[in-house]
Length: 432
Ligand SMILES: *Cc1c(COP(=O)(O)O)cnc(C)c1O
Image (cartoon, rainbow, N blue to C red):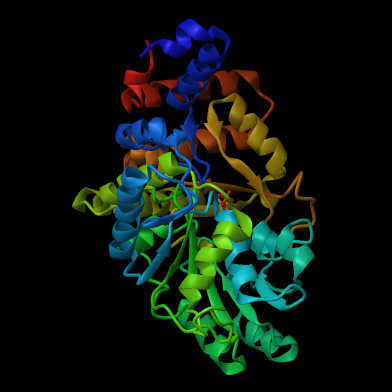
């Protein structure tokens, strides 16, 4: 199809430049991935045209028979992937999934407890600049300065002192398994809800490489575009549905509604209108891929690559928060290398290596500068890179970090990056 090329060469060229960027750079942003052609095709398909407010079988619009089929498949496949009794695939993003859950389980002004953003948490876990910190009271827990892991004695102490109504576990820069069982014990001790945000490790959880939150958490949110390798979006799940504890009744029948019904109505009409049916259908395609045995081979390689990369950095005297990784994420504290996260991100970008600057626990620099970088292996693993190439990548990153302003080195590294990318091609069919 060349419709865009003919109709709007300006935008077509922008798109092609992005294709080339994705093809010719090493993507090490831990939250990014490359979707398959089938996912891309569905996400770019005609379901973008359809209004479908409501849920399958009970929409506010006609003509929904086919989008209903797609949404039902998305839900069924997600249930199977995560062993969940309830799934809502409509949240437009991970943040909106979190918003829907917090507004369903809590009243504004209630207290939530989440991992400190500077310690690996997420904006939506109570940051003052986010709705979660504006609508709710927040107490944050942190990780240990030495081990880089959540300190459960501290979490318990804080929980007992402040008695949050809901505890959030999970984060954006936590390299270790999320300790669902430990959080569950504490939530039970104080009678709090427990929410897991598995936006990052979802693909690892779906394939059994990371423990599942379902036996422990009341509700689970995720994105679909990180390790799960689907289109950009969010999702809410419950291992088991439950009767809501607030005594809210359905006005007509006098019936106590289940949490699933309350979550559904918080997503729509509570915070969203028409669902993105092309994206929901593309989620279904991605979940179908994730159910294939080959997806487990893929996620297993993600973790092997992250561990190979972590080991290589440790050998070069890099300080990794928590000393390594259980997942796809590596968080490097660059303090001993005399370079800020910001400067490292910039220099690496010039060499064709994309990472993001990231706060490290107890960081003394601002979020705009930071002392660390976060690295993830999902995207390069999708391209087919393996442990052998991780050693090369570590070496390239190290060359830049030790001499970030040397243009010769930057050019030399960039040439090797291009060669690597050329050997592991991506999206060749998208260029013409
Ligand atoms: C990425 C992420 C989100 C939010 O996802 P968006 O789709 O960007 O809104 C939420 N929680 C965690 C822990 C994340 O890592």
